[in-house]
Image 1 (tube, rainbow, N blue to C red):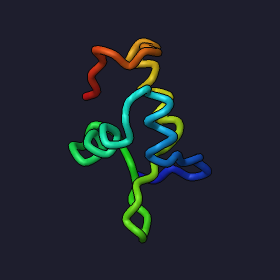
Image 2: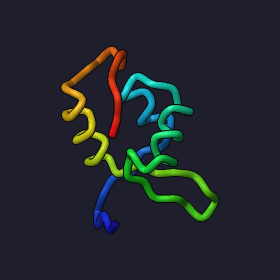
Image 3: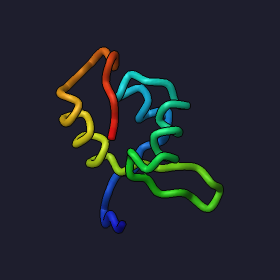
Length: 70
């Protein structure tokens, strides 16, 4: 995927936004549930617009409880 002009978020940023642990975000990315890019150093970066879309799909579940991705 190409994201021209896109802002990218770190794993910890996404975890805070979704109210889950960074390990959960990493697992979801590894399972293909969250779109991401990998840096040359092996770190994951997540397109901000995709994370915002995911938050909308989750119905604005601010507590992060009982929510599933994918």
